[in-house]
Length: 164
Image (cartoon, rainbow, N blue to C red; front, side):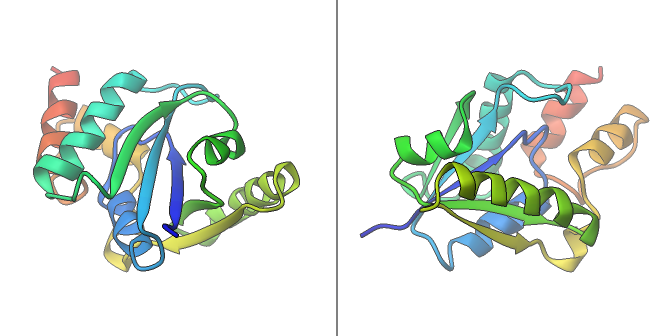
């Protein structure tokens, strides 16, 4: 039986930290549904359909991930309901620092209360990418800084276009 994981997030934009989590996840799962949140309290730079395209370009064009191993979808339902829809009992979450853990722990426990069959797997990006955040990338590009170390070529292009 295939192990399918849901990797939910805003991905506004996708970073090498996110990509590290995806690469590491393939050591334990067969397929990943990258679920791009349409609704949450954060203000987004890109609309959800733009973020879907940016993630697809980053993964399939820039990095040549296999399309049969990854599905990129927008979502506006509970992550536990998304798991049910895609027959998954695994949620992937990335951790950068200890400061992420408290929120992520609460989220994992809430998801467990909503559906006790779902497990959350926490993965850390490589040390070189742990400081990267989507928020910081947006700040750097807005101030005309170089973000090529933090995200893929097509993502850099999309960000530059947004700030022109």
